[in-house]
Amino acid sequence: MKTLTEELLKTHLHGNMQVFRHHIYEYQKGLRHLILHTTSQCFEDEIISLLEKKRIDYLIQPASGKKINVFFGDRRCIEVLNRIGRKNLSRFTDEEDFILGIMLGYDRLKQCERYLERKNKNGIIEPLVG
Image (cartoon, rainbow, N blue to C red; front, side, top):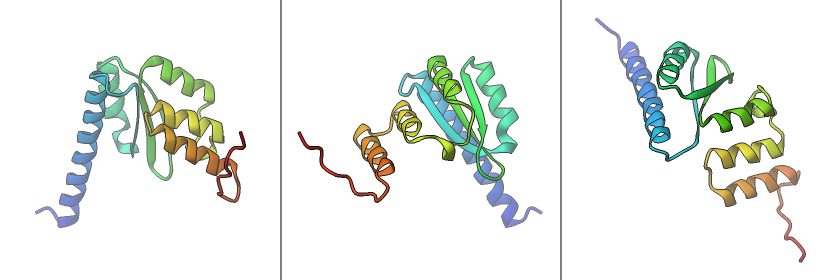
């Protein structure tokens, strides 16, 4: 008999791959050009197999602990990431972080705000003088 913990883990793992498959759907329908999916390393082989079967360009980078960041989408977006360098997201410069956010389709104004907050060490965004 399976324990409650095993059942919860199985449900969580199944849900994670459902989200990944939905990300593939969004890419294939043209809703997004680049997707970032963070998941457990245990899914890496399955993810690579799916992406290669569908001929989708990808880049996998280590994240924290036993997790990986899976970037996939348009080959031009993946090439930009390759040129930025294969490094942990926490090591991105403010400019690289901004570019990635825009490429992932995050809200432009929020990305601008995030960039300005990162650049301004005390977190206060000073108004531009015209």
